[in-house]
Image (tube, rainbow, N blue to C red; front, side):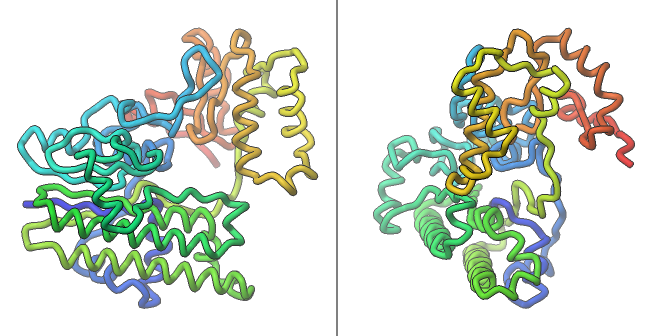
Length: 387
C-alpha cells in the first residue's frame, strides 16, 4: 500500500462546499462522493507553523516544541527564526524510513534545512533562497529549478499592498503551476511508498480576499467582481491539479487531502499585553527611551496620520518588537511574547500560581478563556461557562 497526502494550507469546507454546490470543483465533488470527509481540530495556536508540524509528527505543540515561526532567545529580547532542527520528535518519514519505506516530501512548512531521507525532500515555507540545504539530495532542487524554468519556494503577501493588486493572484497561480510541475517530475523519477506535497495558494488568497470569496454582497463592486472571478479561477486550478494527482494513483494508493487550519471572518480581537499592563502584571522600563516614546504613540494615539502611509502589518510587527525590547522583565509577572503564539509567558512558578489564583476563576469576565499549558496539551481542558 502507498500513501499520498495533498496538503492545502488554509483550506476549509466553508469555501470548498460553496463552490462545489455551484459546480465549479468537480474533482472535490468526486472525492466527497467516493471518499469520506471530516472537520479536523487544528492546534493551539491554530496556524501554519505548529499545525503542519503536528500533522507530520502526530503530537501537539507542547511535545514537538513549535509554537510560532520564531522564538525568543532566552535572556534576550531578540528572536530567532525556527527551523526543522527545533522539532523535538520524529516525523512520519523518519519512522517510515526505519522500516525501509521510501518517502518523498515537497514544500512542507518548517522542514528547512532539509534532512537526509530514503527518497527526497524539498523544503517549504520559511526556506530562504534556493541553496544546497533546500533539498535532499542537495542537487535535486537545481534539477527542478531548471525543469520548471525557475522554481518558486514561496510568495509572501502583504495585506495593504496586495489587496488592491490583482497581479498577486497571477503570481500565486504561477507558483501553483510550477509546484505541480515539480510534482510531475518527482513522481516520474521516484517510486515512493509515501508522498506528501503542500500547496499554499488558498491560504494566501484567503488572507487577502476571504470576505470577497464568501460574501455575495461584494460582487456589486466591479473590482470585487473581478477579484471573485480570479479567486474562482484559482480554486479551479487547485481542483484540476487534485484531479491530475488522482489520475496518477493506482488501486494500491490511499489519498489524504488535509489542511492545517480553516478560515473565517475576524469579529473581534483581544490585546493581551495591553490588558496585562492595565493590571500591572506587565511592567515597562520607566526611562523615556526613543522606543518607549514611539510605542506609547503607537498604542495610545493610534498614529492615525502615519497609518495612512505605513502598512498595518508592519506597524503591528514593529510594535511587538518594541514591546519586547522595553519590557522590564525583573518586575513583570507575565507577558505575551508574540501575537501568533496566543499565550503568555510567566516568569517563575511563584508568579504562575499567583496569576492562576488571581485570574483563572475570573477569566470569562474578560471574554477570553484562560488555560494552563498542561490543560491544553494534556487535553484536560477546563470547561468554563462563557455565557
